[in-house]
Length: 139
Image (cartoon, rainbow, N blue to C red; front, side, top):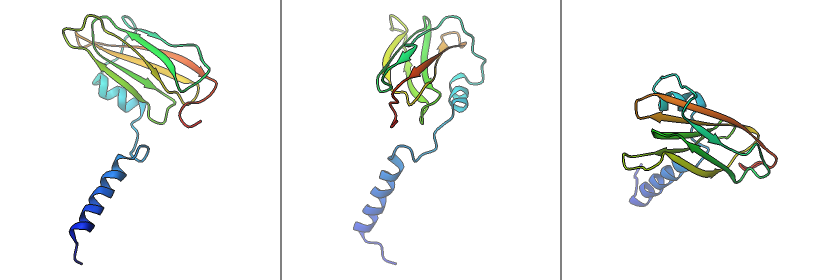
């Protein structure tokens, strides 16, 4: 079989487009994401504050904020979403405050988990349940 340059480009671009399509790759589980972030360390609960609404009327824009003084990284997870990894924030030595605030999309009522890696290598975790009345991830 002779492969022309046009066919080779078509196959290559098609493969790249297929690999980049969301939902087709195997999503990491909460356990895998947690293990990768913590390195196997057991998380504590002191030193992190997770602020979420108790009830979100619209799952498309749920405000979330995390405050973890002394953290070098903060990871947000949504346990009930098709892709549980929401965001990871990293802080350098010049960061004045280790605080992150964003709006996230939640598919249904679920737990939002915030984990912080502290400068001394310890891990702290906070968790909150958000009741969603209208889903944001295709629901």
